[in-house]
Length: 247
Image (cartoon, rainbow, N blue to C red; front, side, top):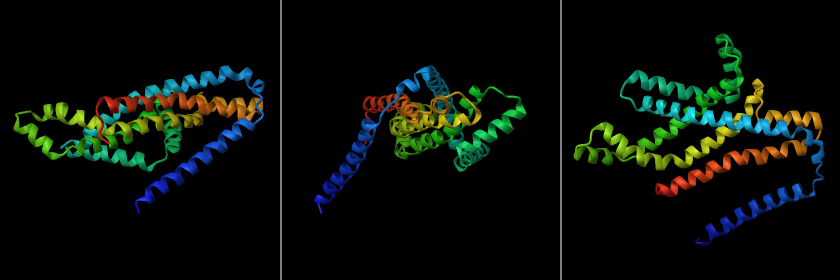
């Protein structure tokens, strides 16, 4: 029985190694024609820049919005709790693609809001903020009740308890899940091509249509998105070590 975890680990390693080897083999044996997309490199760089800008703005706004929703969920004021909970359930039940289309072509159009870039930032923040709120709420509620009682026993006010005792511990616990949500937010930005935001994926599709070099047009997407998501993973790991995240 003791050998079972080792055998399972070996099997998983062989499966992953085989898949990775196959991908590398495909990439090596492909006959690239980089000259076909050379005239369009500026388009790809511009698209990557738009994706980085939209994702950065949406990331900041989603953290702020997620924090407000968390406060609403934890609030003793029942209407705020119900409103926050209802919004989160609504977002979780509707695909992001549908929210983009309905949000832009119906809601934003009725408001006269025609700036696709700013709309993309806001709709991404509204979507991701709901998921971040659930992560934040779970982190706060994971703190044992004894921590609250101990803080009250030494004379701390509820506000001091929340800021000095609960939040520091909750931050450690929500870092891995938050980093994953941040990475998802960046990848979800590719859906903004539906409303003609000139982001990375849309530009790659345009390069493919003009050059007929599908492999060469889409391969930069892998590198470009990794360049945006991998630093978030490293930053999260750094913060986990810094705060002494307990696995």
